[in-house]
Amino acid sequence: MSALVLVLNAGSSSLKYQLLDADSGTVSASGVVERIGEPDAKAVARHTVSGEATTRDVDAPDHHAAMRVVLDAFATDGPPLRPQDLYAVGHRVVHGGDLFRSPAIVDDAVIDAIEDLVPLAPLHNPGNLAGIRAARAAFPTTPQVAVFDTAFHQTLPPHAFTYAVPREWRERHRVRRYGFHGTSHAYVSRRLATLLGRDVSETNVVVLHLGNGASAAAVAGGACIDTSMGLSPLEGLVMGTRPGDLDPALPSHLAREGVPIEDYDRALNAGSGLRGLTGTNDFREVERLVEAGDPDAALALDIVTYRIAKYVGSYAVALGRLDGIAFTAGIGEHSPRLRAEVLARLGMLGIRVDPDRNSGGPAERVVTSDDSAVPAWVVPTNEELEIARQTLAVLR
Ligand code: ADP
Image (cartoon, rainbow, N blue to C red; front, side, top):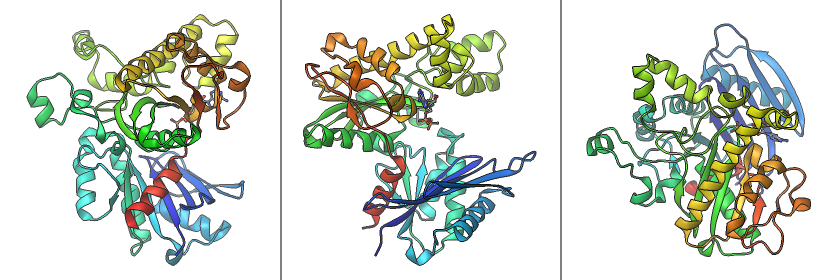
């Protein structure tokens, strides 16, 4: 039996997919349907086979229709996607709360549980669920597996996941640190141990997932012991459009100033971080502005790199011994400048960047010098492969 897995990442208005062999990692097709259910615009579908992309305007009023668009793309542009060839469908699900420590084979009870967690991830779980329902309808006899962004962080000890807030909030409203990007942190931390030539169970690393969303994780012997995102993906590092850590007094202060809660939510999810500081959330643009002498962009870069370095320092303390640091995701993989500035702030840990090794694109490599007390690496993430592997593992 092949290990062919269709990986789906369904958002509120998008459906991303990748068809890949979970054993070899070979991707046979990938694509995305965007603007699902938008009243004023046609949805757009892009399907890529062997590096060749086909883009079409399509009708996709909901995720079921989007799923049909995906099946049509496979039928028209290939490769053939026959249910009998498919081992499973693997779904990215953002919030598994404290209910899911590992991937789950989807049944009605799992769907109910994901539904029950919607209040904790109102922007994400509903889209994920729509994708699961559409895929179950399209592939009724194929096993479906939910892989949770939070699951890898369920090993956090209570002192790392508990907020010092009233018991009622913690018990009744499920307020605690959950953490996100777990699939990426799991993949990259394991990969880094392999690259370091060490057994995962004896390796302590910090993973810096720096994309539009950004988070850090401290991983000891393969188990996550702390992470920077919390109850929601807003906490921690400064991100593309989110602020990261803030004073908890901010909402009540702004409420007294007359700022409505909806504006507050929108500003913290979409108008803060790099965008709030510079006007753009595109890190390439921020780098261009810094080059051009823009003071806001220079300050933003300082804030971002200072915050990351503070987390690495605190996680070095939490881990007790630091064997390696991994930079991953869009900014972590592509920006030598970001890496150099973060590593320069970590000199007291004996870390030394090597400018030649650090220059250039997203290839897997060490970027510190041989005399650096801790090696830092670029480790490109591969969340789809990790979802496919976890999907296969739970079924086998
Ligand atoms: P997402 O969280 O949306 O998956 P990505 O991991 O794709 O995000 O990262 C997106 C970020 O990576 C953007 O800020 C983008 O500007 C940045 N990025 C992509 N390529 C480069 C590059 N060559 N140099 C600097 N930043 C880059």
